[in-house]
Length: 203
Image (tube, rainbow, N blue to C red; front, side, top):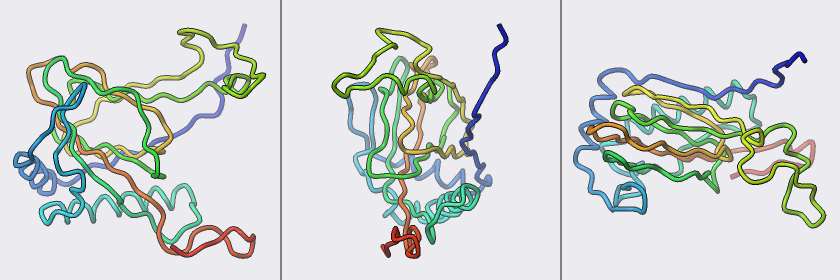
Protein backbone atom coordinates (compact mmCIF):
# COMPACT_ATOMS: atom_id res chain seq x y z
CA UNK A 1 0.00 0.00 0.00
CA UNK A 2 1.36 3.41 -1.01
CA UNK A 3 0.50 6.33 1.28
CA UNK A 4 0.33 9.72 -0.46
CA UNK A 5 0.40 12.89 1.65
CA UNK A 6 -2.26 15.33 0.49
CA UNK A 7 -3.41 18.88 1.18
CA UNK A 8 -0.54 20.37 3.20
CA UNK A 9 -1.44 23.45 5.25
CA UNK A 10 0.64 26.22 6.75
CA UNK A 11 0.81 28.29 9.88
CA UNK A 12 3.15 31.26 10.15
CA UNK A 13 6.05 32.22 12.43
CA UNK A 14 7.76 35.58 12.90
CA UNK A 15 10.71 36.58 15.08
CA UNK A 16 10.69 39.88 16.99
CA UNK A 17 13.91 41.87 17.05
CA UNK A 18 15.96 41.61 20.22
CA UNK A 19 15.00 45.03 21.60
CA UNK A 20 11.26 44.46 21.18
CA UNK A 21 11.53 40.96 22.70
CA UNK A 22 13.42 42.39 25.68
CA UNK A 23 10.80 45.11 26.23
CA UNK A 24 7.97 42.58 26.11
CA UNK A 25 9.75 40.29 28.58
CA UNK A 26 10.25 43.20 30.99
CA UNK A 27 6.58 44.19 30.71
CA UNK A 28 5.51 40.61 31.42
CA UNK A 29 7.61 40.54 34.59
CA UNK A 30 5.29 43.20 36.03
CA UNK A 31 2.02 41.36 35.29
CA UNK A 32 -0.28 40.09 38.01
CA UNK A 33 -1.67 36.58 37.60
CA UNK A 34 -4.82 34.62 38.49
CA UNK A 35 -4.75 30.88 39.06
CA UNK A 36 -6.88 28.97 36.53
CA UNK A 37 -7.75 25.27 36.60
CA UNK A 38 -4.59 24.13 34.78
CA UNK A 39 -2.29 27.18 34.66
CA UNK A 40 -2.25 30.92 35.35
CA UNK A 41 -3.66 33.81 33.31
CA UNK A 42 -2.87 37.51 33.53
CA UNK A 43 -5.39 39.49 35.56
CA UNK A 44 -5.46 42.02 32.74
CA UNK A 45 -6.90 40.32 29.64
CA UNK A 46 -6.62 43.44 27.51
CA UNK A 47 -2.86 43.86 27.40
CA UNK A 48 -3.18 45.34 23.91
CA UNK A 49 -4.51 48.51 25.61
CA UNK A 50 -1.53 48.97 27.92
CA UNK A 51 1.06 51.59 26.97
CA UNK A 52 4.02 49.24 27.45
CA UNK A 53 2.61 46.81 24.86
CA UNK A 54 1.83 49.35 22.12
CA UNK A 55 5.01 48.81 20.09
CA UNK A 56 4.48 45.07 20.36
CA UNK A 57 0.86 45.41 19.28
CA UNK A 58 1.92 47.40 16.20
CA UNK A 59 4.45 44.71 15.28
CA UNK A 60 1.85 41.94 15.73
CA UNK A 61 -0.59 43.86 13.50
CA UNK A 62 2.08 44.07 10.80
CA UNK A 63 2.65 40.30 11.06
CA UNK A 64 -1.08 39.61 10.90
CA UNK A 65 -1.37 41.68 7.75
CA UNK A 66 1.52 39.86 6.11
CA UNK A 67 -0.46 36.65 6.73
CA UNK A 68 -3.62 38.35 5.41
CA UNK A 69 -1.80 39.22 2.20
CA UNK A 70 -0.29 35.76 1.87
CA UNK A 71 -3.74 34.16 2.21
CA UNK A 72 -5.37 36.85 0.03
CA UNK A 73 -8.07 37.64 2.59
CA UNK A 74 -10.74 40.02 1.26
CA UNK A 75 -10.44 42.74 3.89
CA UNK A 76 -8.56 45.99 4.36
CA UNK A 77 -6.55 44.80 7.34
CA UNK A 78 -6.35 42.51 10.36
CA UNK A 79 -6.16 44.03 13.83
CA UNK A 80 -5.45 42.68 17.30
CA UNK A 81 -8.68 42.56 19.31
CA UNK A 82 -7.48 41.01 22.57
CA UNK A 83 -4.23 39.95 24.20
CA UNK A 84 -3.51 38.25 27.52
CA UNK A 85 -0.76 36.33 29.26
CA UNK A 86 -0.51 32.63 30.11
CA UNK A 87 1.89 31.28 32.70
CA UNK A 88 2.77 27.68 33.56
CA UNK A 89 4.88 26.32 36.42
CA UNK A 90 6.32 22.81 36.46
CA UNK A 91 3.60 20.23 35.81
CA UNK A 92 1.00 22.77 34.69
CA UNK A 93 -0.74 22.46 31.31
CA UNK A 94 -3.27 24.25 29.12
CA UNK A 95 -6.43 22.42 28.07
CA UNK A 96 -7.42 21.83 24.43
CA UNK A 97 -9.40 24.79 23.09
CA UNK A 98 -9.95 27.17 20.20
CA UNK A 99 -10.61 30.92 20.09
CA UNK A 100 -14.17 32.06 19.24
CA UNK A 101 -14.92 35.55 17.85
CA UNK A 102 -11.50 35.68 16.22
CA UNK A 103 -10.17 34.90 12.73
CA UNK A 104 -6.41 34.65 13.27
CA UNK A 105 -4.96 33.81 16.68
CA UNK A 106 -1.35 33.83 17.81
CA UNK A 107 0.98 32.65 20.53
CA UNK A 108 4.00 34.78 21.38
CA UNK A 109 6.73 32.99 23.32
CA UNK A 110 8.16 35.23 26.04
CA UNK A 111 10.31 32.54 27.66
CA UNK A 112 11.93 29.29 26.56
CA UNK A 113 9.27 26.74 25.61
CA UNK A 114 9.83 23.60 27.70
CA UNK A 115 6.30 22.41 26.98
CA UNK A 116 5.28 22.25 23.32
CA UNK A 117 2.20 23.86 21.86
CA UNK A 118 0.15 21.07 20.27
CA UNK A 119 -2.08 21.91 17.31
CA UNK A 120 -4.87 19.63 16.08
CA UNK A 121 -6.60 19.43 12.70
CA UNK A 122 -9.36 16.98 11.75
CA UNK A 123 -8.58 14.25 9.26
CA UNK A 124 -10.01 14.73 5.75
CA UNK A 125 -11.90 11.50 6.44
CA UNK A 126 -13.63 12.88 9.54
CA UNK A 127 -16.29 14.56 7.37
CA UNK A 128 -18.28 11.36 7.65
CA UNK A 129 -18.54 11.90 11.40
CA UNK A 130 -20.58 14.53 13.14
CA UNK A 131 -23.05 15.31 15.88
CA UNK A 132 -26.00 15.83 13.52
CA UNK A 133 -28.86 13.32 13.81
CA UNK A 134 -28.08 10.30 11.70
CA UNK A 135 -24.38 11.14 11.52
CA UNK A 136 -22.11 8.24 10.68
CA UNK A 137 -19.49 8.15 13.42
CA UNK A 138 -16.63 6.00 12.19
CA UNK A 139 -14.04 7.59 14.49
CA UNK A 140 -14.94 6.42 17.99
CA UNK A 141 -13.26 6.65 21.38
CA UNK A 142 -9.58 7.59 21.13
CA UNK A 143 -8.96 6.88 17.45
CA UNK A 144 -5.82 8.93 16.74
CA UNK A 145 -6.57 8.81 12.99
CA UNK A 146 -9.45 11.25 13.54
CA UNK A 147 -7.04 14.14 14.18
CA UNK A 148 -3.62 15.18 12.98
CA UNK A 149 -1.48 16.62 15.76
CA UNK A 150 1.70 18.66 15.42
CA UNK A 151 3.94 19.80 18.27
CA UNK A 152 5.69 23.17 18.08
CA UNK A 153 8.39 24.36 20.45
CA UNK A 154 8.62 28.11 20.26
CA UNK A 155 11.70 30.16 21.01
CA UNK A 156 11.74 33.44 22.97
CA UNK A 157 10.62 36.26 20.70
CA UNK A 158 8.75 34.05 18.25
CA UNK A 159 5.16 34.75 17.17
CA UNK A 160 3.11 31.82 15.86
CA UNK A 161 -0.03 32.72 13.86
CA UNK A 162 -2.75 30.19 13.03
CA UNK A 163 -6.50 30.08 12.32
CA UNK A 164 -8.56 30.68 15.46
CA UNK A 165 -10.64 27.57 14.74
CA UNK A 166 -7.58 25.33 15.08
CA UNK A 167 -7.74 23.44 18.35
CA UNK A 168 -4.60 23.56 20.44
CA UNK A 169 -3.31 22.82 23.92
CA UNK A 170 -0.04 22.80 25.85
CA UNK A 171 1.70 19.75 27.26
CA UNK A 172 2.77 19.70 30.92
CA UNK A 173 5.65 22.03 31.74
CA UNK A 174 8.60 19.67 32.16
CA UNK A 175 11.17 21.89 33.88
CA UNK A 176 11.43 24.19 36.87
CA UNK A 177 11.50 27.19 34.52
CA UNK A 178 8.41 29.36 34.25
CA UNK A 179 6.71 29.21 30.84
CA UNK A 180 5.18 32.57 29.82
CA UNK A 181 3.37 33.22 26.56
CA UNK A 182 1.03 35.89 25.23
CA UNK A 183 -2.20 34.81 23.53
CA UNK A 184 -3.60 37.06 20.83
CA UNK A 185 -6.86 37.29 18.89
CA UNK A 186 -7.61 39.35 15.80
CA UNK A 187 -10.43 40.28 13.45
CA UNK A 188 -10.76 41.92 10.01
CA UNK A 189 -11.23 45.67 9.87
CA UNK A 190 -12.34 48.16 7.21
CA UNK A 191 -13.99 46.86 4.03
CA UNK A 192 -14.57 43.12 4.25
CA UNK A 193 -15.71 40.76 1.51
CA UNK A 194 -16.85 41.86 -1.95
CA UNK A 195 -19.82 44.16 -2.52
CA UNK A 196 -19.97 43.15 -6.20
CA UNK A 197 -20.66 39.60 -5.02
CA UNK A 198 -23.25 40.84 -2.48
CA UNK A 199 -21.02 39.71 0.38
CA UNK A 200 -19.33 42.91 1.54
CA UNK A 201 -19.61 45.13 4.58
CA UNK A 202 -17.71 47.97 6.19
CA UNK A 203 -16.60 47.46 9.79
